[in-house]
Length: 640
Image (tube, rainbow, N blue to C red; front, side, top):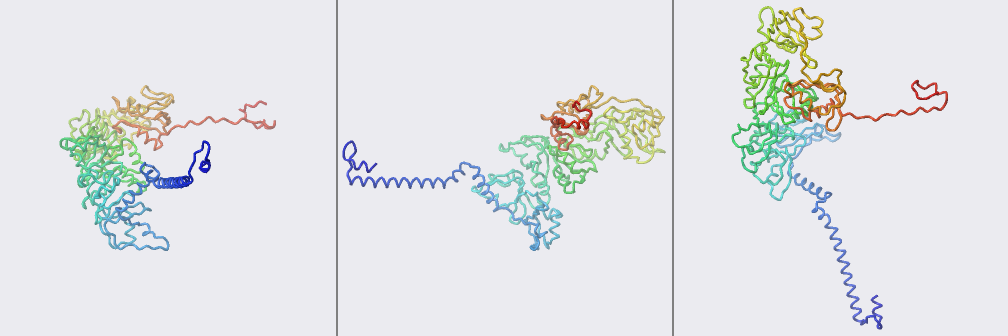
């Protein structure tokens, strides 16, 4: 086009001079070249800066990976050195690895194969393969090593003193080591670096001394991460920045690292006044052992799931934020039992009592025996944690004499009940004298088959007993009403058992049958002849089974609840069926049942959701030959 314009010298075309035309062409060529170069350069710069722009804009494909890698690289510089024990104990074939003669404090030993991770706090000399096996078997003493959960992170304490240019987030349960290899700090909660407060005044960090490491650190490490650990100083800190809510079930740690308290209820800090006014806090003494239920499960699992003994004087922290105290000898629990306890909202065992300042702590029950020593022991332990109430029909053994409580005794810790004798407390027997090993009962005194069993176990394994005239005798039948007898003359009763089948066939002449007692239970499920208090009888699904059970357990007259096998009920928009008969007794459930109790039943397959199967349609019979008619069944629809 430019050439055409240059050649036109006439008409409506523009006329160019020859020199001006060549200059114009040169200028346009240079201009176009510069424009092309600028476009290429801007394109290259845009491609090079794209990752940086995407990182600034938060592209998940680049920014998260880069930040994670940068933080990992920054933390790796402060991580403690780890020694792998697996190749030292079982070296690969043809590749023997030398075992060090000495192991210095601060060495972290790990065995992935055996699930062991420990920190040495004392030097080990003359180390051999046997020593390494003892380490993996957890045989080192508390002053030699600390065994850590496998996910525990260990860092050099230098990481806590980094400046503002260092940013990282440390997990709860991390442990920090000094230059000499001794632990000197423990994280009670997640922590973001750099620190904004001094190390000693930070509520998330527990300073650890050498004495603390040997006495209390192992106990803190065994507490699962589901429990919240709080320093005791926070309870006294009245500053506005300390305003926070302490959840029920939180564990309180002293300045030295000892576990000193448990929050029985939710509480909002700061606390005003002396610590004794804080009723939501139960103070623990250092001489008693304390185990979260998860730690006991781990101990039982290491023992192959076998029952493990739980000593008297042990506090057990449940997953529901409650604390229980073992006040009787002989408690054992296996892994399935402990797992069930961890799922339910409350734990019941005749060897334990729930600890609470806000309500009574009930002990005993029908046929259960407590001793005067148990009451004295509970009084010494729980001077500040409310009272322990004795349930109705509990037996108290004091110096070979049985006392039976026919009503609840609210202040059992005082041990003062003699003024109630003949009113709501009855003396079952007198001291053994003369021919008979024991004399039971008397006018207006009632004994049951459970009472006789307890007497046989604790007092007279062998020998005869005399049941006095006027004694009321009861064979318990919780579901349909007890069987009641009366001794109208002195009864020489040498039998080991007191059962309904035996009394039907061999009833002594000195015993008179009085009849059946009124039923004190609620039966839920399909029944042929239900009473007005029962639920079911039609086989239709029950709407709110949880409410029905709670209304019977915690009504004006608490009743035992039986849920029959095969009962259908709705729960959480699903239909469930009961796989085995369930029984709920009022003295076993001080609190109302919750959804997590049904979740525990579902986990143990005592209840399961019902899946409605589709209707199966039978294939029609196709007749190919007349001879096949003789082979048809009699109920066929085919017509000859």
